[in-house]
Amino acid sequence: MDTGVTFERRKTRQIMVGNVPVGGDAPITVQSMTITKTADVDGTLQQIYALAAAGADIVRCTCNEPEAAEGLARIVPRSPVPIVADIHHQYRRALEALEAGVHCLRLNPGNIRKPEHIKAVAAEAKDRNVPIRIGVNGGSLDPKLYEKYGGKVTPEAMVESALQEIAYFEEVDFDLIKISVKASNVPLMIEAYRQLADRVDYPLHLGVTEAGPPPAGIVKATAGIATLLAEGIGDTIRYSLTADPVQEAKIGRQLLEAMGLRERKNVDLIACPSCGRAEIDVYKVADDAVVAFEGREIPLQVAVMGCVVNGPGEARDADLGIAAGNKRGHLFVKGQNVAVVPEDEMVPTLVEWAEFIMEHGIDAAMEKAKASAPAARRAAEEDRQRNLNEKGDDANDAEHVVELIRKDR
Ligand code: SF4
Image (cartoon, rainbow, N blue to C red; front, side, top):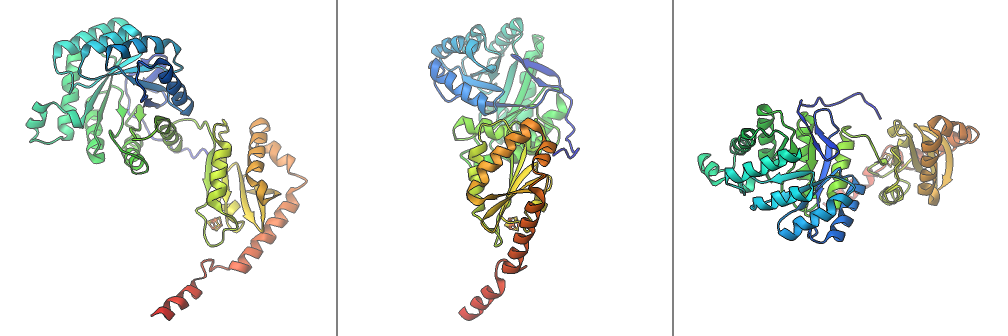
């Protein structure tokens, strides 16, 4: 649904990570990281393909040993998406990764401390036109800054660390930079990004580091990333979850789609929360629908509603939906009842109609339903009345419950 509501984005410079633009007016991108040994070329490539299919635009691989750099040399030419080499401690790995042809480096300034090493990497990256992400991390802040800010990781300390690093790069005239100031504490991370966004116009990579396992990890990462995105801050994102990285990529993509920052690729499933009026197991039908639409590129809004009392109205803006009533499914297109189907065929029918709409459009779907629409509307109205009569306004049977409570006193 196009609401016309958009978030104004902060203006940033644009860099190219391989063929993927980051910053400026480029779409916000999703990143994730492989968890295989990078030296295991086939295993890593398999994971990169899975991440790309789940929505990752860019994938990072660790380059922690010489064998990993050799792996990258074999992975990069076969990867479907640009590859970022993750470097900690050894600047030589950065030089090897550049030699391997990676599309970007990620350096943690807290771990590569010698300015001459950072400058050597920047000079080589410049020759190859390869960007670098400066990844400041609350957990590995330079001890001097930690002390300076009273033995605490503060937003100011993180921003100062990033600015120090940027200065090393700018000294050798290198500006293909993106920056992250991640922390596992959400308010700290939000404030650090806000302050950094006021100081520089380089693109920013957002993330809540070590967010942990789902669902709490997803909540934390979303709280941090979404808050900043709504303020127009952020050019590329990563969910750092203690979970299969395919989930990270999927959730990252879903967040951007939910915020209207990326075009929808897959179905947007709306489902009612269910209540005393529900005529079906809404959770099961919704779960079955998720599975049935999984992997199909059907960017429609599809609603699953537990009853016909409010179903079509609640999902008026959905392209397609189904509401249960009297052991049958009432199919509606743009809130209009168009057909009646048996309950056990609800999900396959949704998929069938969704495919029809993708191929022929909504108007053609209404046309197709012309003959059955009047009868479908009558059937839906009958079920609506029946449901209201049976369950009334008091769907939760409150009077009976109150009586029971009184009895127990
Ligand atoms: S009234 Fe119907 S559509 Fe609304 S939550 Fe209850 S079952 Fe779902």
